Image 1 (tube, rainbow, N blue to C red):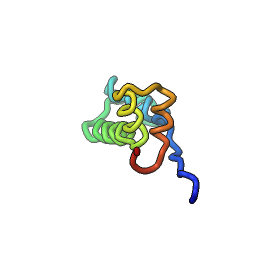
Image 2 (image 1 turned 45 degrees about the horizontal axis):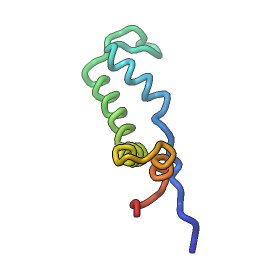
Image 3 (image 1 turned 30 degrees about the horizontal axis):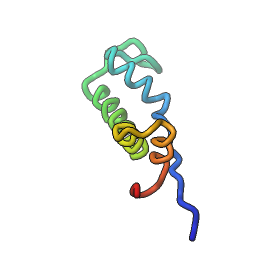
Length: 86
């Protein structure tokens, strides 16, 4: 029987941190539009990206395991396991 597959999961990217900051301040912080106000569309794009990062399967499993009273080390192992928890 093959070894159990392991998910390559990590915390959300640096981009997520930057997007969260831009959304909070409602201003572009990088690139050619730096200092200009975010449009509703651009704020929505950042919200969607952050939602996708938050919904990541590994993060969901990690937070669920912590909620069940597991240690951080146990939660990390669970979050990296591909497939359903047994």
